[in-house]
Image (cartoon, rainbow, N blue to C red):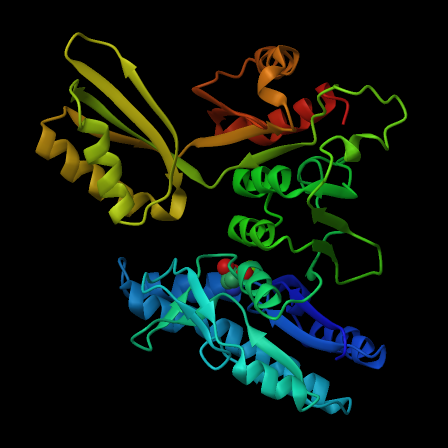
Length: 414
Ligand code: ASP
Ligand code: MG
């Protein structure tokens, strides 16, 4: 059997007719090199945002089911056009929607999870020597309803397909050269990382580095599938994301090799969050359980949970959510506050989360102190701090977040 490659092209790589043609040429070059190719594409440019805006113009709370029907069309446009572009240059190709391609998901609209992929159709088309172009970000649930995987979900579609087809690796094509140690649009001297572990990139991705859909990295790690993030505009090697057998392997490349030195691998900024605070919640067992289980049943992803005791019998509980889940999260919180007789629910959209990432970070006080010192020097107030084995995050004022990112990148001499 021939080598199989799974490639994913993001919205910016297929944003115009010219770009679609260029992607088509890249794809057929793989076929000429003797490979079978499965390609996952996102919607063209900002077209998903435009669809979202249209929906909100019609209905301020658009039903999730119809949102999925709407948003899934974006990818359907790009698969058809890309297939036509490939056909024009004389190669066998077929486009498939998520449903046609056998991508089965849970029934949670707007953030469905892939449960399995029935690869029969895909294999049939590949055996027929066709290039297969698959619509990213979408699937179908048990009741044949169209579902989408959450914004940015095409990466996850690509990794899931690569895993299901047992490909050797999955290539994610984007408009930058790979994963950077800070967002290059904000930090001018951000540097590209050559190789990085799943865990580190996962922190970068979920902390808003914007490189990959976090679920795609989780999935790749689960299947031990190496990911390559690279530009669709040049032939640079990109960033390889994989498992390091020996955790220090990646550090050895450094000249001033110091065995147990903790390395800050990157700085991430997430401006797409909001903080919800529930004030004066009765201080008794089961309260947190009640709140977070209702948020979980509403499929709302929460982060940075803080509970502080400020009076004898009541606490304030606050946490962050993704900006696009804020309205639902506030609704669930208000219902909870009413039930337990809390004082009120407040929310703040003017915050951002800034994080430093690197293996072993939490045990290293020098990193924490440098991080806090940099914020202090800028006179930036820290609202919340949280840490994990490999990251340290602060919630700060959104207005100053980009500036803070630039300075912290400098401070750590990245
Ligand atoms: N088109 C979808 C979005 O913009 C999915 C993706 O780009 O991966 O979120
Ligand atoms: Mg996109």
